[in-house]
Image: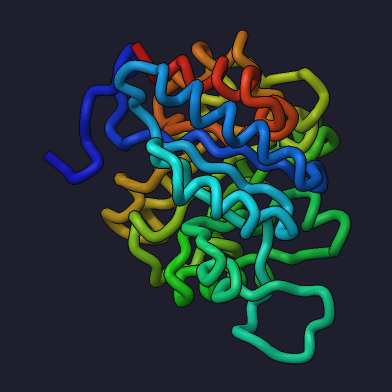
Length: 265
Ligand code: 13P
């Protein structure tokens, strides 16, 4: 049995799932109340069969860390981006080491909003993922096609080339996580058909096995894009979906808990 292998409540998965909340540019200091509420809800959930990660804006990390480290439940913290350099003259940027220093274990890299707002290329995303691994963080590398690409039937081609360009080929399977987030599904309430998610995740698994060798099998592949409590059960049950990357529905503890319940008895 592999280290991560197991049967999780309700849903059978090879890899221990991860449900990650990406708060994006939302939240002020008083949002710590949602973290406290989330901790209480997690305590009430019987045998939670997934890891739970919150990625707030960088300004809130140390504030949240103080609460998380005192809590009874293992709540993980992550950043939403990091610079590829360890330090230096990069005004406004944050290094992977700084995220690690403040208590993060994960960092999202290559989110479609970073790729479009900041013109991030696959090469830059790969360099950020490498910097994260070197700092002892697990990068969550995001890929996903636009609406235009989907309509043109280019989903698999686009995602394959993003994977080849963004995944550090020398990394081990347990050092990285992939998040498949169709750009057209983010914040729109639209989700792909179950078969489409299954096809893309299966292709990602195959492609990772070819890039990384056997490491591709135990690597977690998350789905992201309009995940809510009412569709999480269906999405999380799909083969090769090892958890979720959640935007809007991660901001309020009640909504996020509704999703986490999928992995609880
Ligand atoms: P929504 O869950 O709001 O669609 O956002 C998804 C996302 O971009 C998470 O990174």
